[in-house]
Image (cartoon, rainbow, N blue to C red; front, side, top):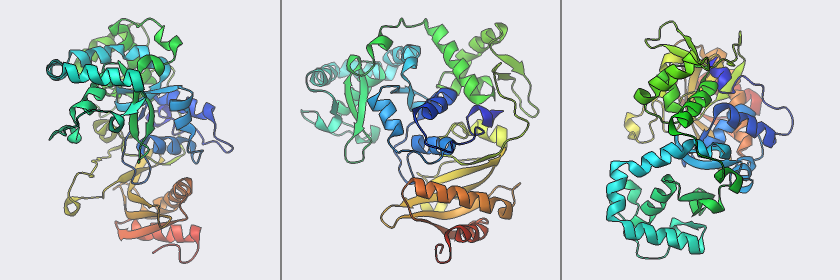
Length: 395
């Protein structure tokens, strides 16, 4: 049920992937978490590949920054959400404005914030690098200066919006006034009462998760579980959520009334570290017995599985993981290490994983897959990739 709710059980399109397919995926999971790390591909692009397979690379960019069907927002971390959800997130923008840390900083830096907003109004859209004025970097917040902090504050409270992603990496936020980014018809809609908006988001989460605890539902849009508990109870009382028990779960669960209940699944998908299947680490462990920790910030000698590890879903289980990297200069997708989970057989996992890696490589314009020697799955995977590529394709 959980995998079906995330869209992974829906067969990938066999023809041209278009905006209808994108709309279906985003509508099903409610949001795409953004991430700047581009070791293989960015997490939001990988989430689409997991569900749609190879597709035109500009599909998501056009929807978000061209047609404005999606918009950036803080909800489950930095995310792309359907633009129609903008009014539902007003409570979060208000909460940010009322947050003690932000309030204290904003009061102390009122002049800088006002100047930043005025400059964007006059010259926008602008990236932080394009802003004029003195730039003094600080020791925390990724080295942000007060101008960048001001832009982020104005974005978080809904005074600015992200008009585009640009810069040398193609991922630098370009800020503009909200009224020049969010379509007028969306801004004209009345904002629902905060409790009603939060309930609506919990229902979106329920649809995206299939079966979930209160904690799971709240985490989808980063609501506080303690506050969400009463709202979930009200939704259940109104028949909008169905209470359930799951064997082995300590907490009660809830099911969306329209949740799909497939008898079996035929999933074959590599998923990003910030895919809905695994972004909630506690839920992934509870659902699949899959313990996942991202090791980007772990010193190399202390890493267990690797730098940027993609879990591999096969059937209805997470069966393995691959430490992957795109060597774009060499045209190679590197699988530095590959591991199976305790319940899985390397021989059973190797061939479908090889197929998925080859498709992922082609999606990123890479010529071949190269498998390293680390992990119990490395040998069988190398053989399976070699069979797909031909002799000499794997080292």
